[in-house]
Length: 555
Image (cartoon, rainbow, N blue to C red; front, side, top):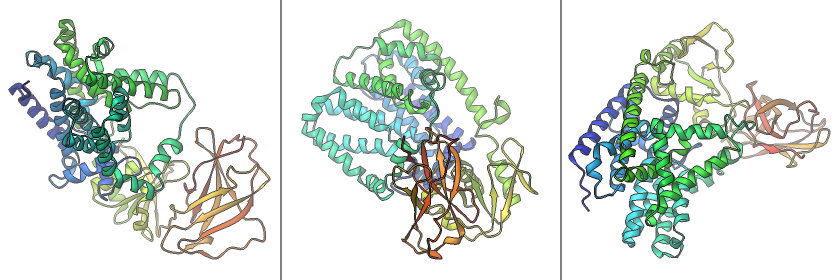
């Protein structure tokens, strides 16, 4: 079977690549893109929220281009590569006959289209999912040493892209249990684990901070059918836009002919089922489902040749999708055309306004890793996100950014927008107030906890421990200690300060690597009905930090 790319396909992919490069260069960054750019400023084997692939892509792109284009360069190439891989995966001998309809279908898949130029973890996830399927198909046809090495490397690249990639790999294994008896499959697994060891080591060194956050520390909310399970079904529609009726009908009528087809079906239904069940526990974001776009693209693409009605309606709906997305693409870059304010609008403007107010002072943002990274990208100046008990931890909580701002004069940008003499224009053109701190000090990386675990009831004696991970002394008199009470969804209810039992003595300073332990009485909080608590510390009268892990209270 010939796999040479037809001329029309080459022209369309080349034109789309050029369009994506222009879009990348003239569209301001998304908030998350700025955050991942911040990742890339410190190359590492892992980051708080995600594995490092997206940061590596941005760092590599920055070697060849500056500004937004540098951030998105590799994503543009991967987006085009994903479409090329899909063409190879749709290996029907008559696919050239229906090339226009096939191209419209592939390019009109909403999230595949959008992630063709945005630098987010889902972009490499899509690319490496398609590459994994291509390599797996070759593995099924001709298993051997070299293809096993290739499959192992691609599995590692998948896992370096996003943790959701585990669902892709497990679905393929579930579709073909005979892999467990295949020595080359075990070789592929060994290669992937070996390549993934640096990230596993990073997780170990950071005490599995990413795993703990995503599985245990991520805030949630009360189940609502309209936002959780119904929202999941709405996300299924959003994946494919106006083509969704024909896309899902093709899935439901598809029949597996071989082991590779089974992998496509298991991957699609496996991911959809996993997140359907997850929707009863938390809200499912659209991009969490994005990996199903790859097997679905292949399944629908194959059936285009067999079903004239499908070709006709998918072609029409696909063009409608493309027309809508063309309007949205222009609106992303050109704000006056967009019906609402979006996060790609006005970032350069608010950063310039803030620079004028802050002058040569550092800027510290309260509870906003997004604004901190966006400010740094467009100003070229360092900044810091000071995260407190009302928010969550992020990359600024575990890297060295806090150390750089110590002792500096800063402009503090609080969440509470109370009027002061100092303000800048936020992205909506409204005044955002802040204030100056002459000498900024913080100890957000102090570790803390409550003993016993689970904690005792009100009126009982507990112990509060503090550990100093810094390479310098910490003045005890600058600290206050508290208990943050959380509801069953780990949202903050209240913080109550605790003090040592009378007569307990402690040192004036906490030495590097040392710990402090003092006894206290658990306070009465009858009106709250908390389910969890967290040890928190306030230093130099800053808002309480996120020093301890959430600890479940006794029922």
